[in-house]
Amino acid sequence: MTNSHAFHLNLLKIAYNNLTQQADFKDDQVESVNIEFLNQFASLVEAYEQHQPGAYDQGQDVLVRMVRSYPQYVHLVARDLFWLFGGECLHFMSDEEIGQFQQLDEALSEAEAQQHEVDYLQLRQAVLDPGSDTRH
Image (cartoon, rainbow, N blue to C red; front, side, top):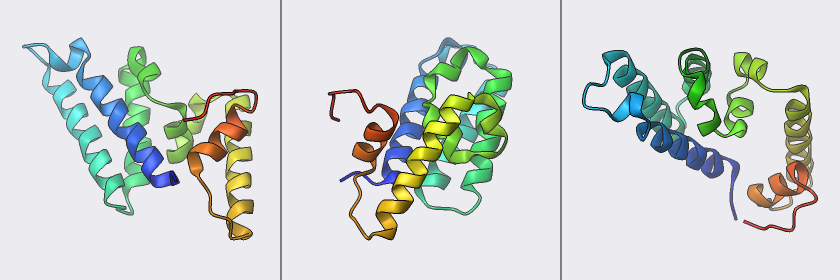
């Protein structure tokens, strides 16, 4: 079973690891602003992992900063994280994406209201990619 928090934490860690492999963040002469951004991202991962209340605001700040300062790397971050952190991050999502994630939230709420055990990954796949035969 995959819960939502574990799923999103994994996406954050993947995004961070992907960013650390980019030239702007791993060259011998990394600019201090880039190091500071990576530190901010690492702090977000830790805050989210520890369920800190400010993690969602911090997530918005990090993702918005990334879109504005590093648009060439936005594709390295799962769209789920833009939805998760919400707020200004939603401005970077299409109406179709927002609608799909709203459906996912509604399906999750309905399952929880009926006290069904929910595998978040399976539910996500059923809602966001209903025609897929692939199972994670």
